[in-house]
Image 1 (cartoon, rainbow, N blue to C red):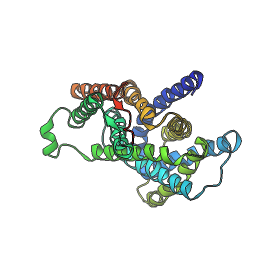
Image 2 (spheres, helix red, strand yellow):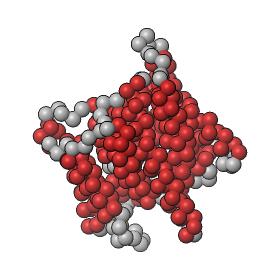
Image 3 (cartoon, rainbow, N blue to C red):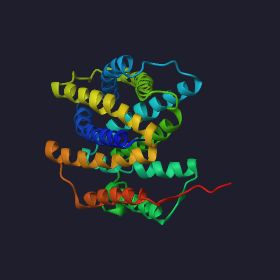
Length: 304
């Protein structure tokens, strides 16, 4: 990849993480105003409009899918759209946006662990130490530095939901690496978003029939529009584009910027306060991922 192309890819990844940082703020608001299946469905129904327009005009069109691509895009929709957003918004209904963002910072390390098994990578001490440092950091965030709480039931539903969302996002990233071959990023994003939205509409229909359902206020619509256009249509397309060009391990490294943007925005816009253990743990997670991705952290594969 040429230097200008690489610079453009990195710039898009930074903007993508900024958009995703904002999704914690918008998601926190929406999750407290309406059922999360309905909120997630609204997000992706909105996202499908710019995705289809972009793909059909300048994105190369919606190519016919072969069997591998059908399976791949359905799996992407099931993991990155349905499962991730179900538990992402469900978690944000129970815990602050800044806390959720620091737990999501575990994504790169989880991706590395999965890729080590799949690609049989040979790690040096740099990556081992980085992984252990990040895992220690996320444990501090989850327990707020009180490790006894892990055994006393103080870790609640919100933390569990966000952790499941992390696992779903790791699956989305890895699956994308092996299923996007022969497809444009626009087509892959649009197809997977369509399948995931259809999956979300099934439980959302039950939310619509609830007698306790209230009509969303104006800010809920604004938040869902942001989630759909910037947090989904633009960000998913750029992220898939980066995964296809530089690989999941390098692309997911940029997601360390997501909690930075999310924490700053949650403090400025939501007035959230952070405990020291969360700040220290978040810094450990980011430092660990940086260490684990330094040159020499992975040895070349054995020959023969």
